[in-house]
Length: 134
Length: 112
Image 1: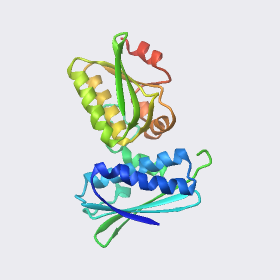
Image 2 (image 1 turned 90 degrees about the vertical axis):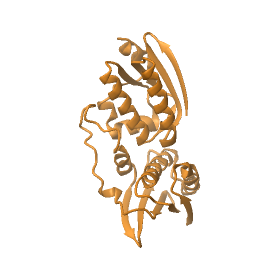
Image 3 (image 1 turned 180 degrees about the vertical axis):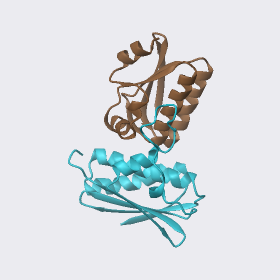
Image 4 (image 1 turned 90 degrees about the horizontal axis):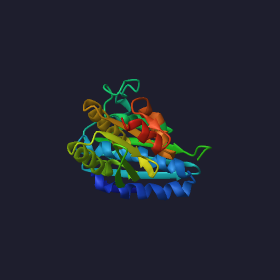
């Protein structure tokens, strides 16, 4: 298990992803699922940086054969991204909002997404597993 | 991310190369905002060299498509592959913005 603290600012995202890539390689997750991991963590990290006024994000990474688990814990205002409403993907261009697609991607690409509020922190746990096509 | 525009048959073809993540989207937004301000209306995005896109990039595509539609112009997305194609399918972006498999088809369709 690896745990590191990062400032909740967008320019630190590459360092977060670097940490995850080591776990992804060690777990044998596969290249396409590693891209999915990047995408899921970018969406979650950007959300933390932009909403709730968090100062720091603790990133905890675990890996097992074919599986990576990431916990992001931030000290921002309570926000449950798993309860956020999904945009209506049947809308035409005029009604489509440019925002909100991150939640759609996270739910489609992560195998498990769980949120809890723990000791004044938002804790988001994301699990990605190897898929046969990876 | 690298942006390489050229004009072809009455439209602008912009090759988007590398990763269109949240940070790079700001650069992409600045490019298309300037292009529209200088009179650009018909745009083809060549996504063949694009290897990664997150929701901010998708949102930017929706924003430019809407803006061009309001101005009587149009956006066509050409030759997405791999992760980019997969993300288009998940977000159903291809139901609101035309997506074609190659640049010549996009140019002929967007030449007005």
